[in-house]
Amino acid sequence: MVVACAVSPRRLLASATGTPFATTHWSVIAACALDPSDEAAAEEALTQLCRDYWAPLYSFVRRRGHGPHDAQDLIQGFFAHLLSKRIYAEADPTRGRFRTFLLAVLKHYLSDVYERERAAKRGGGAQNVLLLDAELEQAEAAFSAQLSSRAPADEERAFEWSWAQSLTQRALEQLADEYEGAKARIYTALLPFLRGGIGLPSQEQVADELGLPQATLRSLLFRLRGRYRELLRAEVARTVAAEADIDEELRYLGRVLVAAP
Image 1: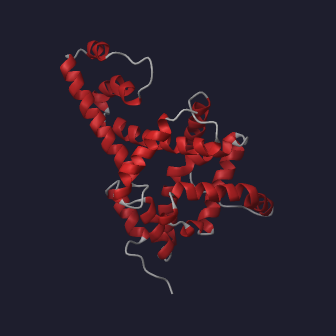
Image 2: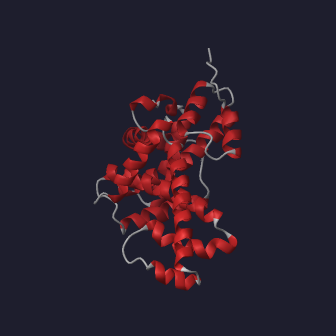
């Protein structure tokens, strides 16, 4: 007997389209696991979820010595395996983070499943799912950036670091969209203060470049930082099982980002 979920995959998609943070990764998994009757909607919802995890998992595979094309094939195959076998239904929010579950499944796939599936593919076509060329290029660019960054050497710590980077990047991309047009120059000038690091310009320098009083610049920066925190919090909220977990996850990701390699 199929147990109906309170929120179907179709309703999840409609909600996610209308309200960006109305659903979480765990609610998508629960809906698709408990109510598989709408296969098309479930596949679409899960594919969108997989996009969130593509880049850190891709970087993990690249760190294991696979070239870009092999890594793309491996991750494509992994997600096809995850969806077709409904392995996502085995994830349990009480047993840890979903990304940790995905990484464990990926390791098993790399060591045991992939060779068998590659042999099977020689005898017939296999469905290629998920990403656009631009998204593949972004994943490779993110990995290349890690090689010249402070990413940890340990592969599991590096995976967590890559995941944290992906979350912050998505928040920054949304923020950039909000500052399109006439405000784009302000966003570009203030972005270094959001990213942090060494060699930052002084606020006085940026105020002069923008032709603004320093008090106005400080006010703009205060609002920009506040909006960024809101967007990052919303991104994190999508990944946790309960609202009570958001603050702890934010603190954890902060520790991951600042930890020395």
